[in-house]
Image (cartoon, rainbow, N blue to C red; front, side, top):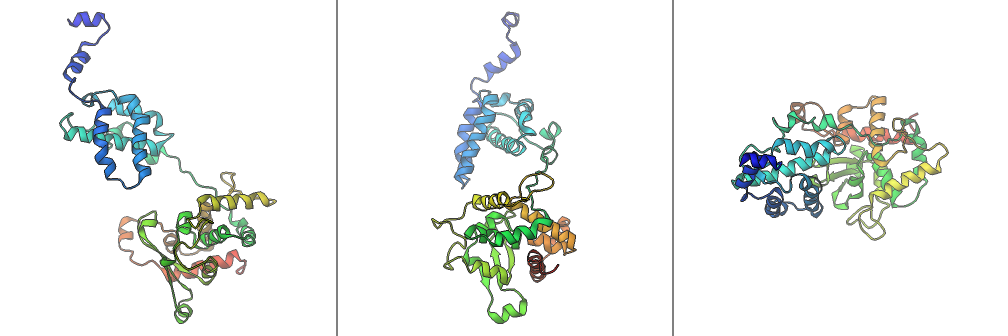
Length: 340
């Protein structure tokens, strides 16, 4: 019988496996069974849609029809390898999602452990790590020598977008942190306290709005307070669009693009040769810190970055807010050309 199968171009071993696997569901079927519970644990509709679309786009064409007990590390490697370097983040999420689906099959007794999509000691031997695969992408930054000229131009612009971009620059914040700023996050001092401390209050950014998911405090200098006080009704969002909703990220990006196009020299990042963008202003601030000998720890805390070793960070219980207030005042004076 086996010889007869061979003459027909059929591998007897694989046929016997398939015969035994008639009752074993395919990866596609297991995915449909596992997804309801997986998606129920997600709160973001966008993430729910991405979970399914990633598997449908990359996994199902390769392993969708295979019985789950026949899927090996080789099949997973073959489908990840073509996108691992070009789309590292997508490929990494895909691997994790395949692993979750196959864990469901293992728990159901439809395939045996170990999971062929696990990373450590498995795919890690076949693919480079995410850090090795990804080339660092630095967003175009405003050159430090252009900063004062750019700031003078920005101050001449009207509108809520220019005010938001000025506050972003003064605080070295991310765009989303500024655009999502709310009045209830501001703790403003009375006049005697402000005189004593040298700044007007504290902006307490809640953990759910921060990239690191930790609460972050920012000193509010008098120039920052003057900008904030221009914006409206002291309720809800500080920077509102015309419809009363959160400003679009494109509002700030488009403003910087217009500033670049209207300037004779433009505002070009030296390394990439591209026009500077809002997020690159954080690099401008960091370069200024380095060139002027400001406190590295204060700067990293202002940028809401971790610094030093894990042990050092665990014991670092202060956010140096008074020192950061002094540093930001010197930064403002630099932009205003007051400390030349």
